[in-house]
Image (cartoon, rainbow, N blue to C red; front, top):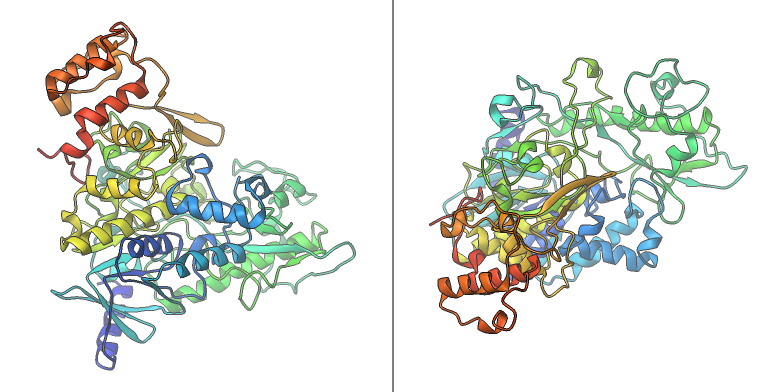
Length: 603
C-alpha cells in the first residue's frame, strides 16, 4: 500500500463513523477538470443523477485552474462537448478569429472566461450537481457500489469516474498503474526505455500578465531563491550563454511574449525554454508533501516574471491579479503533463498511433476520442535531463484513443480519464492535451450512463453501443477531416471507419497531424478489407470498382434488390463515399458485429 492509499484509507475509517446519511447519486465524478466536467455533463444529459466533486474553487482543471488557456490541437476536429465549449468561447469573444491572438494556438481565451463558460454549461443540466472546494478524503467499495468521502461529507453511487489530475481515485481503489517512463518489455515500443524509469514530464505553474501601460512599474518583489541565470536562455537577450545545449530555439522577447497572448491582450506564461517549466514527481506524495513542492514551483514562475520585468525591461507587465482567485496572482494549480497511467482493458501505445492498421491489435476500431497534436514531451527542467533517454519523435498521423484505455483491468465499475488512462508514457505526450482529455471525459459520461441505466458492469457494456451513443451526442470516433458532424454522411463515415473495411490515409503537416478518408476519390479493389468481417480475401489490384460489381455483391449477401443503383450504368466507378453509404446502409457491420475493448471482433 503506497503512502497516498494509506492516507486515504485512514481518512475513510475516520470519517465513515461521523458522517450523516449518505447522499445518493447514480454517477459520481471525482475531479471537475477538463475531463470531469465533460463526464458530468454527459452522464446527466443521458438521464443519470450525477455529482461532480472538485477540490478547488473552479471547474476546468488545466483549461482554467492551471491557466493553460491555449488549446493544443483539434482545431479542425471540434465536436461533442469539446466543440460546444469552443463554440461558446467564440460566441463570447465575437467569433473564432477573435480567439487567434497567440501563435501557439488557434483557440486562446482568458482562464476566468473559460471557467464562466463551463459553469454555465454545468448549470444548464438539471440532473448535475457540482460541489467545489471538496477534496477527496477516501473511497470504499461495497456490493451496492461506491462510497466517496469528500470535504467531510459522504456520497454513494454505483458508477465512479476518476477525473482527478493525478489519478488519485484509481490509486485509492487499488487499480494497477504505472508512473514515469515505461520499459520496452511492457509496451513493446522500440523507442521505449530499456528499463522503466521513475521520471515524469515537467510541470508548469502558469502566470497571466497584464500590460498596465507605458511608464507603469508593476515589478514584483524579488522572489525567494531568485537567480537570473535560471532564465538567461528563455529568449534572445544579452545574458544568453555562448553554448545552448538543449536543442530549443531562442526566440526574441517579443515572440516569447506573444506566444500565449490572450484575447484582450493579456499574456499567458507557459514557456518551456528555461522559463517556468519545473521538475518534480509529486504523484505518490501526500497532499501536504505536494504543497511544499508547489511553493518551489510557484517561486520558479515568480522568478520568471521578475526576470521579464527587470532583465528584459518589461516593468509595465504585471501579474493580472483579477485573473485567478489566488493570493499571489498565479494559477490555482500546476499544469501536470503526466500522472498515473492505469493498466486498462487496452493499452494505447506510440506504435498503435503511428500505424493503426498494422498494429497487433485493431485499437482504432474502438475509438472514443481523437487527437491531432504531435507527441510532445517536456524534460529539460529535470536536473538530470542529459542522462535521460533522448526521444526523437517522428511525425504521426492523427489518432483515436481506444475505449479500453479508460476501463481498469482489475476494478469493477470504475472509469478512469484525464491523464491517467491506459496509455504508454510515450504516447501520453499526445493524449494528455486538452481536447483529447475533454473527449475522453464525454466518453466516460456515456459509458457511466449506459452501465447505470442497464444495470451492467462497466466492462460488460457493448463497445459499439458506447460508440453509437457518442456519435448521437455529436462526438468523433475517428479523426477524419473529410466531413463535419453536421454533414448527413458523417455518422456513416465514422461507423465504417471504425470497422476498417475502408481505411484512411494519415499524414503530418507542419505542427499538426491529419487523417483523410478521401471520400470523393474513386474506390479501388486494393482499398477494401473484407476478410475479418466476411471472409473475403484481399484483392491486390489498383483497378476501380464499378457499380455493376459492388451492388450485385451486396445483393447476393443481403437479398436486397439494389438494381436501381447500377442497372442504368453498371460501368460507373464508385466513389469511396458511395461505398461507405452502401456498406453502412445494407451490410451494417458496425451494428451487427460487436467488438471487444481492443477492437477485435466478437463472434
